[in-house]
Image 1 (cartoon, rainbow, N blue to C red):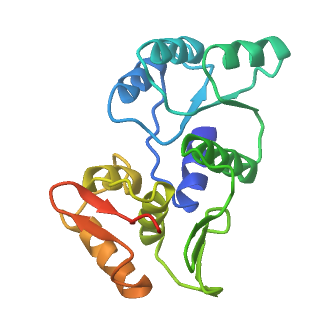
Image 2 (cartoon, rainbow, N blue to C red):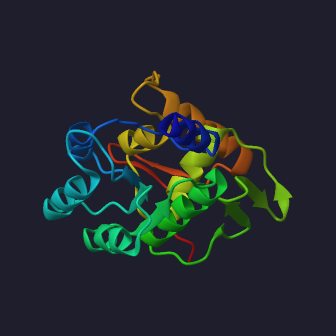
Length: 210
């Protein structure tokens, strides 16, 4: 029930969420392409969350990890952090707080401290899920917002179409072959053709401002 609630809540915030229900499945998921953020329950069947986390860090896994657990004693928090967790949230928790902690982990992993992403006249607010140009709100779909968010996190760094698809779609979602291109085209119409560049064979990039 908690997993389903978290998945729905984060999906409403615009996140693509893959949900697994035991430690062995979590280990298999973490062996694939890296995630933006990992939410890890310590009380997993088949293989405990702490063991999954320790093994993942030993293999070089670097994603930010937020531990979710009912074990809120100090010793358990210390064990989770020492195993490689970046943050800790005890059950029961508020979904708004969880979403805020996920945003904070995304900021830190991107090397940012400021909550807003600013690029010239454009400002993206992840918490409000809002984009403004010269102070005026620009209406974007959820997936348009996520693509823009991904590109603005690292101006000048190309992001591949495959990586954008992973950010937009969970395992159960059907992905159209030209979905990313359609969303990028819509963003260019709304925000200007020069904002997002296509690098053929590489991906998309928002150029750094001089």
